Length: 337
Image 1 (cartoon, rainbow, N blue to C red):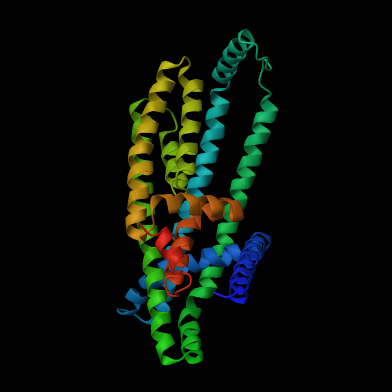
Image 2 (cartoon, rainbow, N blue to C red; image 1 turned 180 degrees about the vertical axis):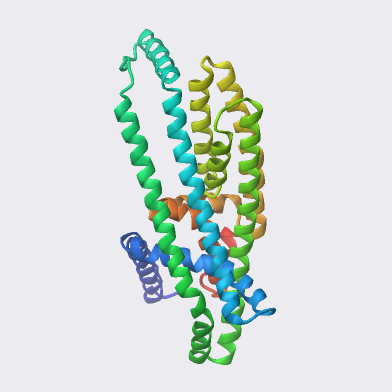
């Protein structure tokens, strides 16, 4: 290989690296525009088979209407679950404030004995302000999800027209490849959402049952919380353990019952979420478990919580697209199971 060819190869690799860095920076900078579109595209890919199946038995306009109504029902149930959970948590903290202060006082005394001085009393106003800020952030996220729903409503009817335009722009051979890639991506997204929904329901029901069996208050809230957080692999599972265990200290006092609650939630999460969930995802999406973790970490860094929610289907789509080209096929082989 000549010196010019070597120089040309290294120059191309350097340009590719620069382009990747610029693209990542653009994705972070254009979060408010690109993320809702990507999120909406994933939802459209999941809903389109439902619309197509309904259209076989009824007029197209009615199939669109029923599909959109199902989306509105899902988003409404999500918002109602979030509102219910936050309201019940605030009410429970208010009712158990005396126990909370007692437990915090014991913690402050223990910390002082071990040379870690902390305030001896809880600032109630600061705690409530923190909860209100958290509620405001959640409400803002729910509103953002509603905005994504509007994009889906406007974009779903455009799918057939977009498909026709792409067909008109491409030659017959390219059309077949485009159709194959599109169908593969849509199928992967549906499998991922189906697997995640199934394991999330299982996690939520198991969390609620364990809370009820141990006598922990707000069993429904902990079930809903773990159901929602299960859509964020690994990190969401860990976060879902913390609130019920902390509340167990407030409700029961001591350490025996909180320890029992903690052990039960850890076993549930390890069994359902950190074993079954990644294995099912890797099998359904042909992604290795390590690729799933890396993808979630990367997209969380780029787009935050929203990126974590759609990290797996986005990565699956990228793997499918990379598999269509010789130069990028190594990425497909690297990430596939």
